[in-house]
Image 1 (tube, rainbow, N blue to C red):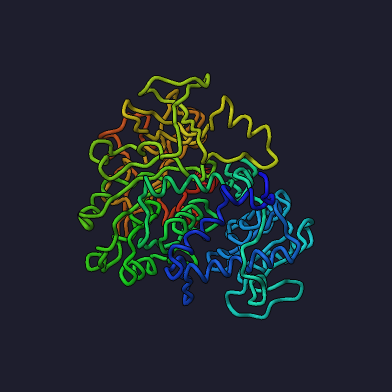
Image 2 (tube, rainbow, N blue to C red):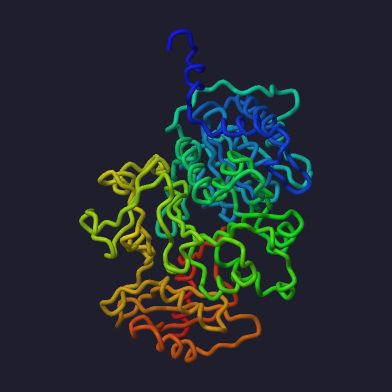
Length: 529
């Protein structure tokens, strides 16, 4: 464009996530986007720290397209580094802080970051593999405990020292430039790196405003780990729309209750496990949750009995089921409060930026009501899997993102989740949805938590296997569960193996780790044989 520099031409009408912070700072400079522990930031303060970080990263030699890995619990340092990277077009690769050193080594060597930032509490496990991380030029230390920074590591806070410029960095950024490289859990194979772009994250603001109705004055607890795309979505939405995030180091039920009452939290976003367990607290009936305008359940449908309990507690609060995928940044579908009565088993309609259909095995659309694979397209769909051209092509065949989730869709566009394709249990020639059996088990008055998986069986091919957590003080017999299921479930859906445990394995975002359950059940079945 005549008379403009390349940067001026780019910034005139670009899509870049860092610009969201700039614009909200201009509107609400003294509002509070972030609190972590005893530190509260105004938008102006956060934008200044992020800009200094961007210049510090550039001074360190990090440029557009470079990747930086981080292994840390939630903290303000994580946020400043993440947004500093986005402002210069660099890419953050957050790692699950529960990973073992060999798992970290795989992801770091696959993603090839130039820098690796590690929380002080987690550094010991990384020292053994430090020399094997060949592409890492700089090792950063996230000093949450105030300890001395070890030799060979830089203090992450040096990236935003006061002597660095607070001006906006001048970097050309395009909509499809990567902003995030996030590795999936990899329960069946090596984890895949999902590439989310600036356009992906810009498009989620449409859904946050239209579907979730987040806005200025909202207060949200940031307890979901920041290595989870849902946590990043929520924080980006809060920044863009002028809301406040009370960030937790890690999800803590006592802290959640404290924040909700003292800080008048307006929106909860939690997996079903939290809604299941909070009513078990001895003083639950005395707690005041009247500030809550919206309670979102993600990861799985909330058991109806649990939802009824919460509705009685919060009669004026909206409830919402939320379905999404990392590959969709993490949009998908949600069931609005007004639709719960008519469609209680649905995950809702597609979010504003997405178009969804149900395809059969031939990758053609099925008539409404038939069961098949959910596919989607729209600006929230990932750029692809990093270094995985064949897997990306398979997932995007026909111009649609194939989710791997088995669903049906009714004539009104409501989607009903059947199961993950890999979690469908094939038993005696029949297909059983593990989620359907789980939902039924939650109706038992003594069941606090439940999971259902298929285990290899010489007669049935796979045997429906239930793993159950009894409510505190309750004892359950196997026969009691079998008899309960036989009342309402077809015989082939009734669990043939039942195990009772104290807790189910879940990651910090509440996702059930069925790969671990399969290993544990296999060991128990071998011991019984």
